Image (cartoon, rainbow, N blue to C red; front, side, top):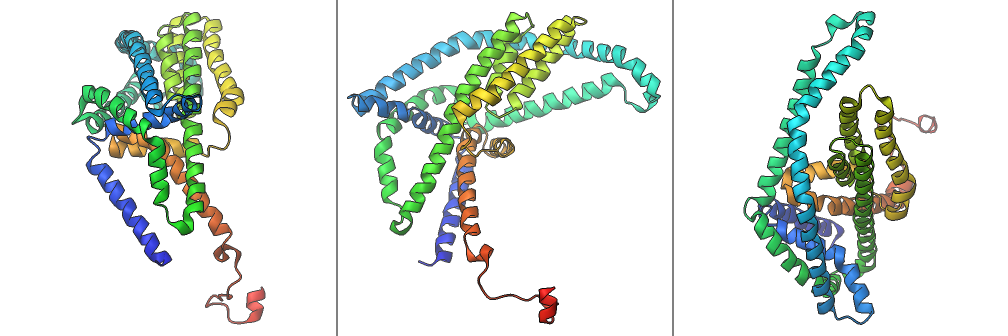
Length: 370
């Protein structure tokens, strides 16, 4: 088989896979979630096997413990989060109005001094429109995720099917890996194994490491904001920790929300406002210098911009299934792109060595040397 035919085959396979993913996106969520859960828990099952526990028993034990912890966490966190979210949404218009008043009071003299008062739009109108547009966009995005990920299965089906899928995948994980490995073309098996290993390390390093970073940051932000008495500090802190899965987005979102609430609540006490700011500054320092280097590492290769693009793009195309697939697919594409770049830099196409191609406008050797 020629190189052109191989490339055509893999492009066709990729197109078919994307089409199937798009057509079946409404029913794939429990299966994708089960596969992701099995992938995350496989190292723990391997460790239990090494100490003498059978694969079936290890898989069953891990999954039962995971489900118990998950259900317990939901029973504790969901009522608290629901109450906090409801109260925050109820107070949000008052916070916005108060921030507008403070902005007019503090910035009004400066604006009049600069003589640009007539050129600025009315603050309540501009800020109100901005907030309305933001809420409308977020609502539409969440509705798209809901309809794309839950249209056919529903939450009950997700909670029932996902553990079953995860259990069977966890039991047969090593066998499936060996089977897929046996299908690889013999001529390129070592190369494919190397690329697959790089993809696995990128996904595992980011997902497992970043999940632990999110847990630590969310706990720190929630406790810190609650201790200084900030309204909805626990909710804002947990939200910031959860969104920290996307680098910088969680901390920036939490900082904006907490500073807005702190200004309304503590004004004109700058001490508490600066304390709120200090919590996020300290959290970013710890994340950037301790948590991320130790838990995530520098070899993951997922740039924050590429990760944000992947999450938004796959989420818009495939709903909640796309969000689950965004990180592994982004990591895989990144590894393959780096491998392709290395091949290009080592190829005659980059290094030269072939016949010199003279541009039609170059007529003699003197022009070429020039």
